[in-house]
Every structure is written in structure tokens, then in C-alpha cells.
Image (tube, rainbow, N blue to C red; front, side, top):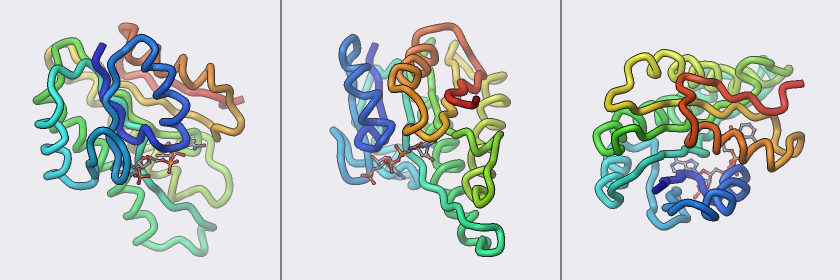
Length: 187
Ligand SMILES: NC(=O)c1ccc[n+]([C@@H]2O[C@H](COP(=O)([O-])OP(=O)(O)OC[C@H]3O[C@@H](n4cnc5c(N)ncnc54)[C@H](OP(=O)(O)O)[C@@H]3O)[C@@H](O)[C@H]2O)c1
């Protein structure tokens, strides 16, 4: 399989990228590092990214900033950052990527446990994660060309095993699952 991983240089990306490289051809992308430099919060940059890669079977996004703070310290700009950088950036990645992805390909987006099991001070992350999940559940109903879409929703990576994280990605790219929020470490 030929896999495009956005955010391969991050904490999650550094765990899953070498594992996927064992059996797949992997192309990495990121804002400052990767085979291709791309910023998924920019439509132009996403389009440029997809014109530089071809024949992609799976797009994995392990990128998307969001800000959390105590509710009393939150303000619109902090929510906006997560909505732009994590939610709309990933939605746009799918909308544009659909034109380029191979038949029967897959998208795996990133959300996070705070979207469903928030802790105090997490509302900035929670709203972005919850909305990513909602997008995946709804978009999965309308994916063309046999394309599937799932979200990986981990707890803090320091609280989960690398094996569980890698297996979540293998499930998303390598099985028939579609519209699934693949939860890791929710106990
Ligand atoms: N780490 C956790 O415990 C955890 C748990 C649950 C969910 N998550 C979610 O998982 C995602 C990744 O987390 P992480 O901890 O791996 O983050 P990270 O260590 O900050 O890494 C993020 C990676 O994504 C890239 N990136 C960020 N924004 C981008 C953009 N607009 N366009 C292209 N690349 C971009 C970064 O590239 P540059 O370094 O080049 O900027 C970096 O390689 C986040 O959405 C986070 O909320 C993380």
C-alpha cells in the first residue's frame, strides 16, 4: 500500500511511521519536516501536496493543533485555533484528497479521548475532537469510489501502548471498517 502520513514527525507520527514502513511505501508530510512540506490549514498547500504524490491508497493525518485551558481562561480565539487547525484542516484534507485518492482507499483522521471523555480544562481540545468524530461518522455515509474514513481517538500516548496505537492504524487502513472511531486507552 502507498500511504501518505501527515504529521509523521510528531509524537504519534514517530510511533506509527516506522511501523507502517515495514510493509508499506510511506510518504511523509509536515509543516517543517517530511518528504513534502505542507500545511493542511491551507487549501493551496493541500492541493500542492496531492499534486506532488500520486497513486495514494491511504491518507493518515496525525496532525492538528488545538488549545486547552481552564474554561475561565478560554476565549473565542483559542477555540478557533483548534477548529481551524484540527477540524477544518482535516475536513479540507478529505474534501481535496478525495479527488486524488485511489479507489478503495482510506482516510484516517485524528481526534482524541477528550472529545468524548473530557477532563477539566480540556474544552478547547474537546470541541475539536468531538467535531472530527462527527465529521467521520457522517462523511463515511457518502464516501465515493469505495473509499473509507475512520478516526483514531487515543488517550494521552504516555498512557497507551505503542502496539495498541499501531494496531488502530492497521485496522483503519487494512480492514473494511468505515465510519469507526477507533478508541485507544479509554479505560
Ligand atoms: N500526543 C498525545 O498524547 C495525543 C493524544 C490524543 C490525541 N492527540 C492528537 O494527535 C494529533 C498529533 O498529536 P502529537 O502529540 O503527535 O502532536 P505533535 O507532536 O505536536 O506533532 C504534530 C505533527 O503534525 C505536524 N503538523 C501540525 N500541524 C500541521 C499542519 N497544519 N500541516 C501539516 N503538518 C502539521 C507537525 O509538523 P511540524 O512539527 O513540522 O509543525 C508535527 O509533525 C493532535 O491533533 C493531537 O491533539 C495527541
